[in-house]
Length: 397
Image (tube, rainbow, N blue to C red; front, side, top):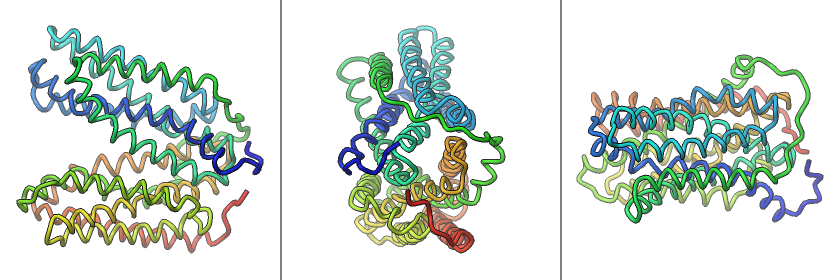
């Protein structure tokens, strides 16, 4: 464990060398996103429902796998979990390549492709949270916010890189190259992970996952209130711009992502200095203001600014809540606790599309962002209550 003598630069590099496995995982997740639907529709001859099933299967698999990933990482160690996840990632790439090569047999091809997406979802669950706890285990809980910050940058950066890279690779070579790239990413990450020092395996009582989940639920509900805004923005901003006759909706997502990353980079110690709940309350206010600006925007520029404010507001919500969660969770259950917290993010983002879609159908697209702003407000009230309930200093060493 970090003794406190490590310089900030060396500490950041050590953390980055661990969360880079999550970056590689998210790049691999992004590579097929823009090309697989077209393959299912045009090459295999299936409809849009099957295209949606192929893409959505991974996210359902990740959601369902998070409890198991947390329990296994607590029992066998975070590095072990990441190694298993990276092995699954390489296997997913092999199956994706086989499915694309066998496009002449559509039913067999789509079955293999769905199997590959299920394995990729499990791999994502085994990599994402254990990467965080691996770094926390090496450097101590005092650096939880720093680890979460770099891990979030790795995840969003991986998505941003993966999707356009997948289109480029497919255009320059062929579709099967996507699967081969996933294999290479998985194998490269495996080699790098194998030589990294594992975190100590923590001893103590292993609580049932349901007990951990229940203890995390208040923080998880606050995270869900925040995450619904992100889900609504990604799902409906393009349709919202089209309904208003505006162009360049993609700049909203660019502004969101850029503000998210910049906010984390320029305020690396904000959670350590002020505490998780105080930072999250401010973030939820900023996020709510940003979503209100998107709702009230009279020009695309104002909507883009609102989306950027939303990204700034989202930036420290998960790290802040993670710090508060781990401060009150037995160390032997930290993987399960963070996996449980991540479940609320998955559920909120996954449900935002259909639920806000129902609201948009009856009330109009603009009301989606008003509803998301109101959810941020509910999250703000909830975090204020949690802050009063836990009015005590956080762990500082």
